[in-house]
Image (tube, rainbow, N blue to C red; front, side, top):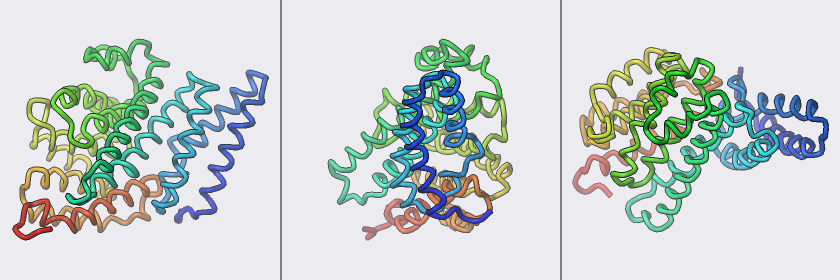
Length: 319
């Protein structure tokens, strides 16, 4: 399958808005439920390529906010539909990372003003909405899970989850980790990281190959950059990196960028840092339709890391 074109993606957003408006006019419960179900599958089903298959970052950045509000409008009509809730969790998390946090993180030292703080604050709020929607999806099948997980008493609740819950578990965990680590988090926020990571680890227990190694990819940064007091472990980060590459068959840029970020954060092994970025940029974004957007986003980050390498490693004279 080739690249989706602009004309393939824009009508989907228009259609979604139109259908959302029509749904409010439907009075027959069974008809409305069926229509919402069909739209939920079209927007957030695991096989949809509306956004995940897109390569044009500007197009996604301009159209995804509309979809976020479409999701919320539909959730008002069907607040217990796990497909809508999971889709909203994924969409809010993706937008927070790719189009709010990442641009803020790339600001140079001279630009790190109130604007960057505001963008990080916005990303934090978007991540929290994503987390809460994904947790709400889990709550539909496992009442009480949200409260238990948020209070750090989620072991038994998570043990009751099944393979059918993996997508919601993943996005709840990833969004929560994003919320806790964006910007310059304090120790109180970081102390909750193990609770968020537990959701992602549960995905591995249920389906190690989920998202072609996505859970391992998410844990690379957690283990690699988190303080040891909240679970950081560079050996585990390396193990997750190897597992992610093996499962994805070297077709994902994200593991390379995650490990490079870990090295840069510790100012460790510049040679390997450079090699990881070269490999990230060598990934063919046409090879995995369902992972194209993620690959394009992470290659964009890899280019920035490569350009900023001297500064990140504290090389004398770097601007």
